Image (tube, rainbow, N blue to C red; front, top):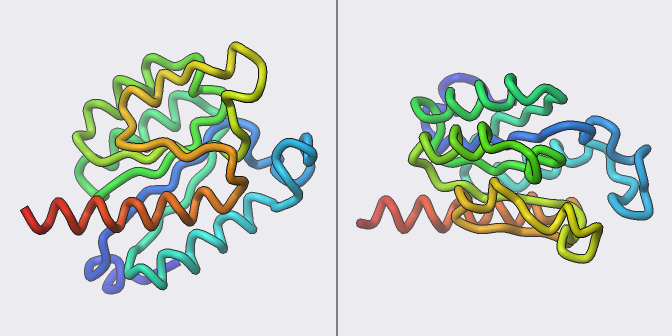
Length: 158
């Protein structure tokens, strides 16, 4: 992780992960692939370094903790990349927290939720998202960080 002085110089992006993502590489690899959450974190750190970003990468299985992290972002981050996992389809509270941040949000799903079971086709989180990336595997995180860089640059040029 970057030291405090590095974080102050680089825009901080929170990369937040919801339930069961700690099981990446073990759980349904035919859907989610063999990369682990540690692999995803390393990918995000490498991508952030290239883009001049700082990343705060976290995962929780608890809805309340995820909501608290989102709320913290309002005063400390420039944007949020979030894979809400199962909370995408169930959590209005998470949607409300994301809307309250007034930050750009990129929603990421490793699988294409629109090609899966019908209950996965709707995401409450998408209503708060500036953009959604799904179905491109763990590489979607890297794409989300690139998109966030562009969003921040556009915001700074206004």
